[in-house]
Length: 220
Image (cartoon, rainbow, N blue to C red; front, side, top):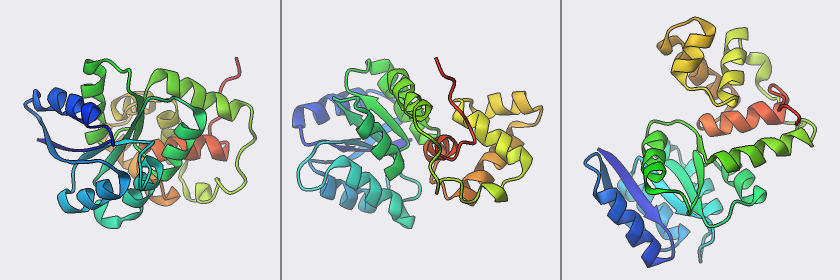
């Protein structure tokens, strides 16, 4: 059973998400919060698998709530998916840097929304295609971040290869096929790279790969 926390200051939005989620046999909504501070408190109380968090909220916004959840070692199993009406680059970038596992706009269709919850619960990075295009385009016009390469020298050649494939959006199964290794070995390479680079999840691993220049986006 996937346990979900809803964090949104609009009761109608929360209610709509809850109706969708409650119809699924493998998903359970364990709590609802109307602001980020309450969301962090309920995350600590219920330890959900997925927290669906709005960005613009009173008291504490979604970016800061995500940052607090990601910074708490006791909440390492909580995967935050940002839900918002806006697809602005600054929101995307700040949410991923804060530790979000995914970022979706609220005009997503129900089937994709439910898929997003399941993907996040598995610990995979998830971004709407339109968000991904804008995020990657940011790195086309900017040089590598000078501090983002810390820890890269500790990666083995195979771990670097796995990170580069994660940054291109490949799953562990696809990475295994590309590298001619088992899925378990691919997962091990990814997990070790995350530990060495201090990445909380695959989403942050993608950001670090681009910021460090390990992966260079294609220029259109």
